[in-house]
Amino acid sequence: MNCIRDDGSYTRSEMGQQTPFHDIAHYVADKKLNIKNGFYSNLKKGYSIQQLSDKEVIKTLDSGAMVSELFARALGSLFTGSCTLEQFIPLIKVELTDKYSIPMPVITEDIVIEMDKEYRELLDRWQALPDGESLELEF
Image (cartoon, rainbow, N blue to C red):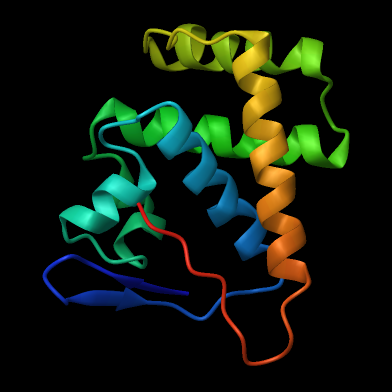
């Protein structure tokens, strides 16, 4: 994964087979919900991919990072069938509010449907790429 910032600086990481699924979920959630301090916002600010994978660094980040993480995980769960559309919002709400005391963003089932659709479309595009090609996303 290569992330090139507006100033030309970049961060890069080798990815395992499942990592693109999770990072694409972050992209969809961060963009759709306009999460100010989510995964991609933090990359844009100058954090490296490695820093955003470090539990000690994560503890120092704004609550937006946790919101981004929980929505990315939930999108992955929706994709795999581990949760249903009806379970999606309550699943996130319980963890955000009960475990982390973070207010739940305003979200509707329609927004979840839109996120799921975009996520699946991006995964289809990524999986259809020939070897050596890349999926470019702007944030």
